[in-house]
Length: 428
Ligand code: CMC
Image 1: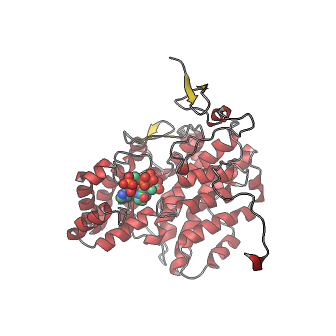
Image 2 (image 1 turned 60 degrees about the vertical axis):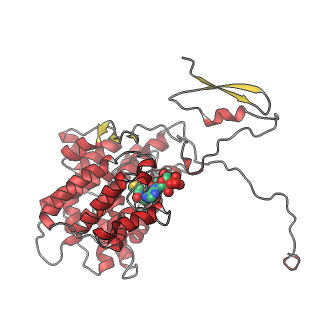
Image 3 (image 1 turned 90 degrees about the vertical axis):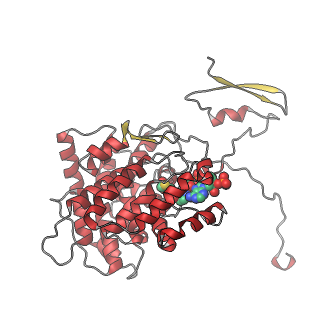
């Protein structure tokens, strides 16, 4: 089978043979299609990059039609079921393979060495308004780390790169917990490195006063699974931002801050918060059908439903739904679960949702678990950002080491005015 695409330009009658590799054509090959020799050549127009592969990646595979998600070739269900720690999966994403015992121990030790933050970073956290949104504080504090670690700009030095990776993964939970405690006026709790990654995080979040806070093993396990499920998701909005910022060769703290900002929006990582607000607004199972009608009339969206890539049940949502039962067995059932289940039931049977292949995504049930575990709603995006840092860093590293990449710089189709003459203000 010839691996080319034949294009006939009906404007000129000219014929072009474009090579096909991995079922894709190189967009730059379209540039030879011209009407005149001095033309710029043809571009492809792709708002929101819906059909453009901008990178070659070995990190995460998604088959949206079949509902498959794999990190470095390992199905997400296996990782969620068997991985004993989030750090094991973070290692897999960054290094390309699961660690052996020694590698995992060394990786853990390296990350734990970096869980404390400089006292001035702590002061910075304290400088935010008393009720500052924890995600705003988190993003700004991550960005500020660049001023504490000027060596981070040495991005082509592998040892330096690794140090920043350890620092970012190690400090993320501390910065997150400090942002949360500050927003509630609670005392800040320093890291306890004898605990697991998620155990230490829960300790920093919820310990007040008592000399020993016993982390609930069900919560610790649930958070570990949630962190694993959120650790990467190939070229989503925030990862695209991470790669794009990284392509300018800036330090990774600046790039992670930008990626986290992209994650905050309600169409992306802010959706889990939006789901809880929606369930609160619905209030009871009897109101579900009227909300569904509003969605079908185009008056609103069903938050936690739909996905750019998945046109099937999000495999992460399946794992989370099971996890919810384990958590609710300890905490008691979240009463909003009944509303969520009814929403899902009606939506999955409804022509509107079936036709558009809209299924629950990762955010539909995660907020219910977070809320039941005692996290406040405005902290949900931070809970998404912490584990995603490993994914962002894996993509950042892959991107800056990819010899085919350059600084990201898309083209535009200019449709504005040209060649106007400037007029003094009293003549406009
Ligand atoms: N509720 C109702 N209708 C929807 C929804 C929804 N949640 N999502 C998509 N649609 C409709 C949309 O109106 C459109 O209908 P039509 O063809 O009649 O115009 C059709 O489905 C296709 O949607 P789209 O907007 O072209 O899809 P997209 O790929 O641009 O958007 C999305 C993907 C996730 C932004 C969108 O589904 C959405 O806004 N969902 C709600 C927010 C949400 O749950 N976000 C979390 C995403 S998963 C976590 C993450 O990775 O961030």
